[in-house]
Image (tube, rainbow, N blue to C red):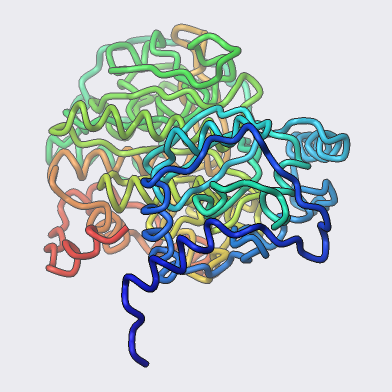
Length: 519
């Protein structure tokens, strides 16, 4: 077939932009918006560019509505408040869902995330506010606008062709701003007493079992690799940087929970940070003298608070936290960085904004992202389902996959999780205690073990791409036995820090370079 001339395509697009909207079978009356800003020449040019973007857009997993906007197959149920709870929801997630449904049914404002075809401009922002939405955050990295709006407005934007909104062509997708949480499966007090700090890693001959299981102590003692010069961004509930294990480790703290101070009021983030990069300390735990340490005990911590004191938040807060990591990385381009995310949402999908943001960090910013598989046994949480993320399962000290650990495959059919690490009764820093300790279980605890190993790899091979880092981890993982060896349970196996830092890194190909150029 012969291609249409470009001038003809432009004429058709411009003509369609000036035409009167026609109502569909669900909405019979044209709704005009007299206070909207007028489109400019720039908008019409963008409309032409968007037409070409739409032509090559991969819409797998999404549904195109009659207005041309893409949504998840469950979106109508979300926007009408008829979404049903799944059996795997925690009490906290169920409470959030019920509160969301009640607001929707009463047409009260709730939060949504709009994904646009191009970077959001001021006219689109003004137009959304003119029809009653409140813009909360704009993420240029994935072309996202977080808004608060009544469900009736969202229904009109997404489904009503008769709703007069001349900037609708900018909108590619609309999502609910889903609930996100950390959710360790258990938190246990331990009888502990701090004995000594300021212990150099090479002096730790009796590291706790989790460190020895992944052979991080060998990476320190035999290779002198401790994560020095590498930053681990802990995207969580914040970090208590005054704890003895974390003093001097924190190089920055950002808070995106606007109604709380820049402190870890939950304790989860502090625990996670100390597993990843806690300084070694000697302590009496349950009557035993042990050395408690992070996997990368000389790495830095970038504390990014996105979850509140209850351990929960929204996708928008996660986007804000990850965008901050990108900005920080741009200011420190020569310092290797890895993102550690011990959180997830049971409501997301392989195409949701969190997944898109994670993929942006990996593919465009070249930052490895390590994410918990989740603690729901039968599924992998989002954003752990992101294809290029390093998704982590939990094992106990006997190298058995924990019963709670999220099992794959991922919702897109790819094999998940990618790797496993200790995640059962891990003793680490207790926030607010100064020098106390607490035991937690969950894939939340397994994740920072792998983040720490990535920091060790990056110290040795600072220029490795995220794809290469993931390959090194998988190639050097220790295979598990029996059912624990199932790829959908433990991925490639148990992470092996010593083998990883001694592996021959894969060489980048022309295809790797070309792939990074394509969003």
